[in-house]
Amino acid sequence: MGKPRSSSNGIPLSRRNVRARSLPVHKSTRRAIAFGSAALAAAAVLSACGSADTASSGGKLKVGVFFPGSLSDTGFMQSGYLGYQRVSESLGGKVELSKVEQVAAADYQQALVRFASSNDLVISLGGQTDADVRKVAPQFPNVKFVEIGGPADAKPLSNLAYYDPQQAEAEFLSGAVSAAGSKTGAVAFVGGVELPAIVNAATAYGNGARFTKPDIKVLTPQYVGDFNDPAKAKQAALADYGAGAGALGQIVNLGKAGMEQAAAQSNTAMIGGPIPGDCTNPAYLGYVHTDIGTEVEYAVNAAVNGTWKAENVKFGLTSPNHGTDFKLCDQSAADALAKAKTALSTGAVKPY
Image (cartoon, rainbow, N blue to C red; front, side, top):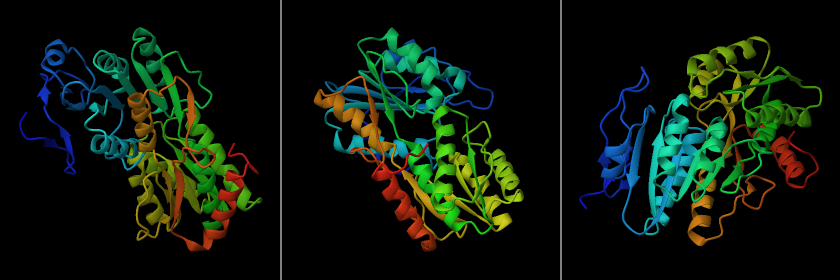
């Protein structure tokens, strides 16, 4: 079989890796998608811009995980990838894993078709893939599909389950801490793509801020149209800080780098996450912790154990599946955070 190939962080990803020929893709990207077998490589006519890896051996449940964004975004995709790595370590003897990352939106459907053609379970991360997942799943009735982060009220199909990370709960906590830590009496939220889950999270952020301080000023949320554009995120953050916001919440993945610059430039604060960092950066009041990887693990375990169902499954503070927490940096907001957590977990308030 040869020596297992490792990812950039040293974790073995594959026992065998057969690469397909490079195909012309998006103008900004000349990366080939790697396929897990010679047959797929020969048949590949996929134009998605991205890269793929396969960890394979015979007689196992075949699982393909679709990461449309970057695995190093310090956000939704990387959080999911941590779960992918845990599955590789804990269930490597039972599953054959493959993944693809950084795919152009125009190529989502082709990437999903390719995965469905060669896997028993396909997991797609991000509500931005919802329309394509719903088109592809009916074409492969014998394949199980899971979408993580789609519309909270989405109706499952016969072979498509929806897993809701309940980002709104996390952003309620983010808003509560932001209100406690803001020195200006105002807060704001910056989102990436204006998807239903992100809009709900923005609403929850404002509600959390008002839960802590009923008279807090909550600026209109901004959606920059991209989760991974630091320049756009910085511009939005500077506009909010300029309008008086003393703290910002966010769901912008790689865009956080731009927001960090804006916070430092404005001498103001922000909330990080969904992967918690340390608290040495004075810009951070704290970090939302939304563990998307838990949902990847849940899906694979259910398929392996024969308990998988086409259903809506929730993860978060108010769910027995957990997956949501908050790491506080500014201890002056500890009381606000504790009260917000209690109110959510007991059902005394709803995030939106």
